[in-house]
Amino acid sequence: MSEVSTQLELLSGVAQLDLVAAELLRLDPSGDQVAAVLRDTLDQLLDGRRRGRWNYSALHKTEKTYMGTLVEINLHREFEFADGDVTDYRIAGIEVDCKFSQTIGGWEFGPELEGRLALVVWANDQTSDWRAGLVRATADVLRESKNRDAKRKLTREGVGRIRWLWADHPGLAPNQLLQMSDAQRERIFSARARSGTRHGQARLLQLCRELQGVVLRRTTIETVGWGLDDPLKRMRSNGGAREKLRSEGLVVLGHQDNDPAVASSLGLPVPSKGQFVVCRVVTSENSVGAEINGSWWRRATAADPVVPAPIVPR
Image 1 (cartoon, rainbow, N blue to C red):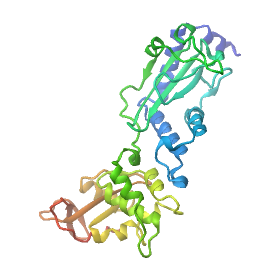
Image 2 (image 1 turned 30 degrees about the vertical axis):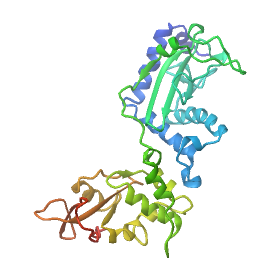
Image 3 (image 1 turned 180 degrees about the vertical axis):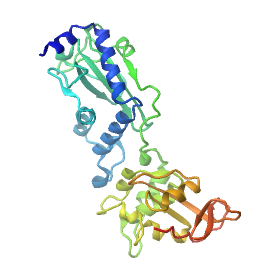
Image 4 (image 1 turned 90 degrees about the horizontal axis):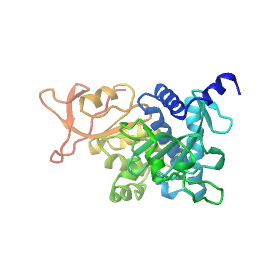
């Protein structure tokens, strides 16, 4: 251990926690990076593009156990922490272990971590909530009961001692398939191909009909289109959703060419790379809405008749 590391280890527990907290907030002031890592890790485990899975409960027991390891690995990669000697990381020169649990207070600490600082992380895909904080796993905040590996959980007082970071963050990017209604999900996944359309393409078309006016995340598209070689391609022209849904009055807008300007003019969220937004439109008067190929179009209401959507110039 270097002289600097030795000096850091001799600091008081509070001083060490202050240093680690300050460094984490310096690296990620808003918490957006941690939230993105958690979202990506959940999506990585669900593996929707290959497996069509959208619900954490569908994972095997071993996969759920692996979630904690993946969170630790992916945070390590994101922030390029130094390796710890006993713990997963060294942050601001201080040994810090990473613990993930699906429940607040579910983290388990082995004997080697007693007295060590821990970055405890929790995420709930159903509600899009997450939390991350720091706590020192001292004997007085660990339960007496142990599991077969001699690991112990925090007491209620121990949970109360966690210094939560990024408490005001709005949450994870939503798992759109998990959070939609059962009826919507059933209509999407039960969609069957018509002549010239594969089942995956049929599901993507139904996804566009069901989730209008919101950004369709890349993971959502890939999960619904599982089994297709390139689900994102099936959202575009040349036989994709953009072309097939035009007769239903739906425009499918991405992140390129004129699409962002049209989305903004229609009052829609603007997609980023790999994302799309779908909206039914009708012709408009008095320059209201978006100008497309010399004509004006606005978002349709339920009372508006269905008219073919315009072709947005590429």
